[in-house]
Image (tube, rainbow over all chains, first blue to last red; front, top):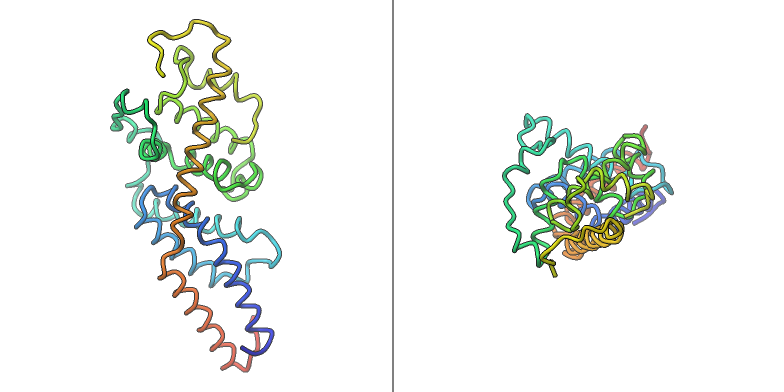
Length: 188
Length: 68
């Protein structure tokens, strides 16, 4: 309880603590499962703690933590031999949602639909649409170009609309529809 | 809610797309917020506490010097 040194580490702890609820929500959205998300969160806390020299006080700690978490998520995916990877909709073929369930879209339906998205699309829409990051911040977190990030968000939205049967203009494919609507490029 | 027929009118598209988008955004936030509101399991609070304690102790043992 004495000295400036203690103060510095407690500040770091406090700041990290205040970001944990959002970080955890991101982890759960990314994994779709609480147990896996909590393992990820634990690793992230440990990595962030041991790497705290790499964090510059006063900069965006939230973005820094989110970046550690998503990088960990992907290295975990890779080390599992892509067991959980779902990049091109092999999972989606298995999703069977009945049209009558869609009429009353509840959170569970939404969650299932979100899980069907490829993880890079899912993370993009979550970062921008729920975590409150700008496209630029989200792109920095994901280590991709802003244009790529935007396109992932648009594709995620289009796919969700399709999965949830949210629009009545199915005549247009989701891509075609979003070419028209996506021009605005506004935040979700 | 679901009309029996699809409107053939292309002017519907923009409006319904926008509505769909709003629904998606709203559901996404609702889902995310619901997790956020669960709070943080104790084990993470304990973990941070332990890390912080360990660091303070280490700092004291090395005379408070900050090693690079």
